[in-house]
Length: 418
Image (cartoon, rainbow, N blue to C red; front, side):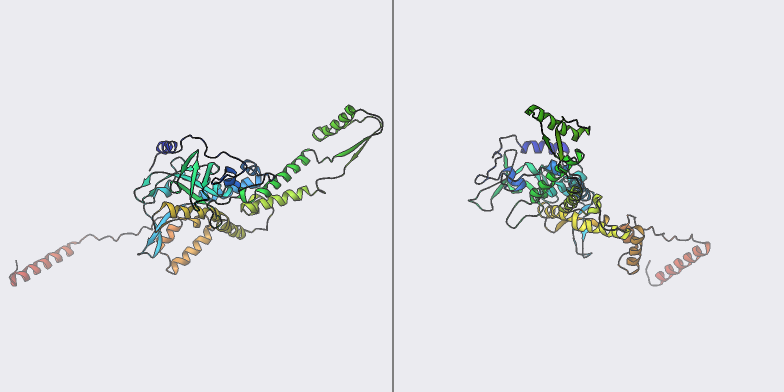
């Protein structure tokens, strides 16, 4: 197991401070992908690209990402292998280090949280492979890398050839642990939410900004100011400035004689600002992949049983969307053939205690589980079985044993043994 100091020295030695191979530009040169290409795909200049900071600043977007990442980080995983005696894929007694402690620089929870966020936002997770684990023959730990700092270098003359570029240094594919959250056939990089919905998220941010400005101004409409008497430009600018001050101070305005003010009628309700913001919030929840009711938005009427079923669906349909690529990559690249990593989703989808007890009782009664196996499902150890005790020997028993021994010795003497 690598220590934190060893991992830091290893990463510093590998990631030398050199000049960037290809400078960030708005165009893509032959054989190179720019940083913008990796994050968002080639974008025309007129299309605004929403940044991570802006997207995460949206309460519904940021909260939705946190919910998914927390579910990934808080769910246990384990390495397993087929056991022919049991006929099932059973967890290994000695878990590989890459599963028990994949990153010496952080806790297991932090690693899984960061990996989940990388996959959601950018569609890719990267780690610098550490030294080999003698038990698996594969890297025993990794140093996670910022997903937006890893470039890819390709060569059109050699289809299929590529290298990773980090801090100006090139790395072969087998030196970097790469997880893709889903890519088209023939493509290496996955697509995250920021890339797939960049244009739409920019529109949401623009609408939110405009709505905030309207509400911050007290929903005051613009106006047409008509001045009948002669006035110079300085006076006109003064009237306009006073009208602007109303938006922030809410103070009454005093206009010169002969000035007519005609507000351009409009309000937040007629502009459907409230409805638009609500619709955007629901759409953001769908983009991130989180049920709207988990973000405090209006959803279907939920009973206790509905909430329980909803949580199970959330794990299966939303969390596993980003959790499965991570375990699949771990199984393929970090563990020997025949061993894979699986999530313990059952621990997160457990029902209430009464329902669990009823199911376990039925399983034990049907012979599907033993009592100890059922107890293990609820975190209990094997049931203690009272050992039978031998009653102390009585004087009568002792006399009987002596007589039996004497008879056996006499029989041996008669057949010439002894």
